Image 1 (cartoon, one colour):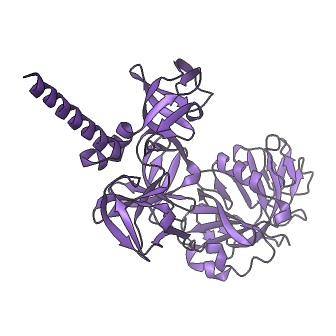
Image 2 (cartoon, one colour):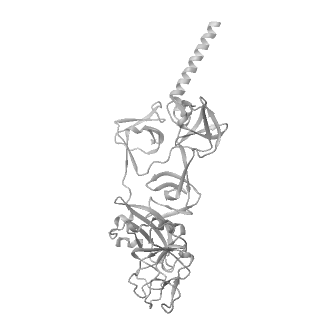
Image 3 (tube, helix red, strand yellow):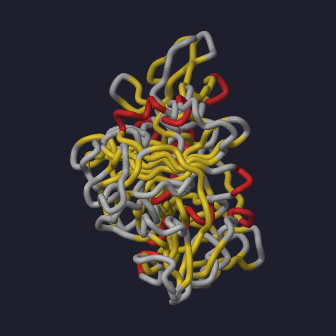
Length: 448
């Protein structure tokens, strides 16, 4: 009887050892699920005498406790150089510099939350401001980001695909999930004759198939040295050592086709769908290392009656054309522009009397018979702005006081946008880069 019991005990120990080996190597159902596998296969132990546990992934976050040397940690994910852990039933973070891991995989990167920072942000049908707006999102709204294409995020928007400018989206790591989306404009091509596709991010995971040289891959994200891919309708992983990555050509910008820019290295482009609309789109571009880059896009407004091909004094229309940029101005101190800046006083006016020798110039009251009419400059619309150098010859009746200034409804012939955007553009403008402003209906951009 004692011999049989000993035999049963030895068999039980052997089965236990076999099961432990299977778990360690990632076999069976555990090996098909990366998130479960890393928890089972990797041990995380503290190497520092005492290691602070913080409320967030950085030393600026508050300390919520500590762990000691040799202590085993329950790691949920990784965010940069920090591990997210379960600490006494709550979430904490420890520096990965003081944690030793052993096993085959690493925890998944902590995912990113994408939040809108602009008051209203257009959602477009493609990755660029030249694409039509299909709707909008508002400040604080969380976005479902699929991938990134240049400076644009591809998102799920009301059940369809949309794009938003990454300039107005703030990202921050929050929960366990795959890493940040790969660039949409990247092509992934297999370089090995045959490359195994595995069920997890490591060679210890079972092969679920293979891909061949030259085959294009649909990459979801990257985990260490492994790409997570869509493989025949299921999730797979391939070694990045045998995949070639190449970015496809970026889409051309509208300014790339302009032939009248001369030595201008900064362009403000103001466009409208037609001549009769007061709504405009404002874009800024800058030439960097010989290539045009888009800097900003914003909504704006024109004259109450839209654009004019041949402007006249008092017609409530904004002139089309290409113009240089003059003096910056405002009712407050210089906001940081490199343009010549003039602070408005209560006596400042812009002469709009076509019969005056001072027509279309900035002057100061009193008139003393020098003009019969002039526009007051000390108004909220001119909190900040700059002069568009229109009608520099001061041809009587052709139009005066054409500015880029603050406004969201309509103007008497100027171009306007929010104060925030005006200040942003003022700070960006650099007279050494010969900036110009182009105003045109979209259908006539081929003139430039």
